[in-house]
Length: 580
Image (cartoon, rainbow, N blue to C red; front, side, top):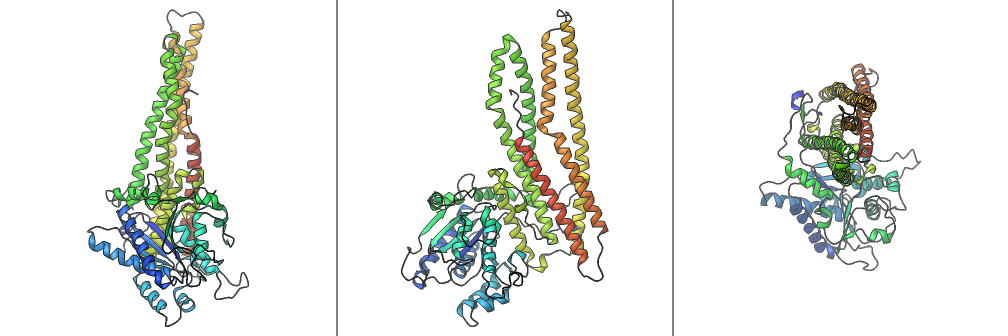
């Protein structure tokens, strides 16, 4: 494979549209007489999603346990095959298995050798688009028994890890549950609790305590069990639960307020995450992968996000310039008796309108820029095999307006994990590292150019503000010395207002703070470039060269996200009110 065949981030192919990840959790022992009703409800759900999100690929993330997991997986594959026959264009829907143990161990320990369920599982594993387990996904790796002095082959922690993996990557959880807590680690009850943001008594990870992950939604299909002594829930009754946005709803009364009337309220309502994803995918075909500047061929999603970020930034800059002009008009209007009425109207407009005008385009710009930059890190990390999740590092707690970005990043990461589960879709390490080297060198060069440009702009506004202030001072002194006949006071007031506007605009754009962050990042990228060139193999330890190269890419990715978090926090605090 030639390096020109790769994307600029080292990916073998463009992952394409953003998927909606649907996780499945269900009981292993549904009653046989209830299966027709449960199947109908699940099929109705998938058909409704296909109709509501026609441009969005669905990924069914399934643990493939006996019982409802297997039922849902088989139904999903049949429905997708049926959908592809009916429509000429369909997105790339996928079934991705997330096993709690390595494949062979799972078959041997969790299924009887000649059982019907094991035969179903073996057939499904062959039909899956990707199979993730502890052998190719560190997050699903078995816990170390020596660490806890536990050698039990049925250690339940592997199911707890699997449940956390499903919840972390799935936005929508389809749960087949009887509503009774089984008290088992990794059981359906715990998975539902994690998805709804509840605190479950058998928590095993930090994420379950502090609710640091972005919220998701739950579709619960009530499922009586064979092991139930009596019928304790209706058969195949569907309930819909919305997002527990800040994890603050933890008691039953507060959680009850999350219930919604139907699926449309979860996936089609204005502003909800699936609707955002569908809007992106609807326009994504107009942005095929293409070379961008000197960064190589970039993915369609990155080009789309970069385009929207640039467009929003241009709109934001135009509004900032309008604010600067308005500040001059306010100063002049309020200083002259005959113009005070007009000046006060401009003050009122500035107080009520300008902050909103600024915050709208600015927020859009920040969102799309964050997505574009985080995508680069996600793609590079996936290419070189870094076991890291940019969604965990991106601090969307600053504002709920950024939660959807983390959802997109997790969906993208799962997409790439599924892609790289096949050796044919993994590029050779030397070629990926060459792409990484080009990116690191390009970032260092770009940051240097950006710093120089912003220094020039900063100097120009400082110079303009200083000159107009000195001119205003000279005019005021002349006016004070009694030459009022030749110099009108309006000129000095105009110069003062222009000076204040120049310094205000400079502060609003934040050139000094931005350059300080850019300078730090540039130094780190320079260090990374040096480290990459110095990395050497170890004759006594095979694979050390790749490990060192991977560490470099991980380090610069973390630096990129750190700089991004600083930038977001700084930008959200910058609101210039010319009437203030």
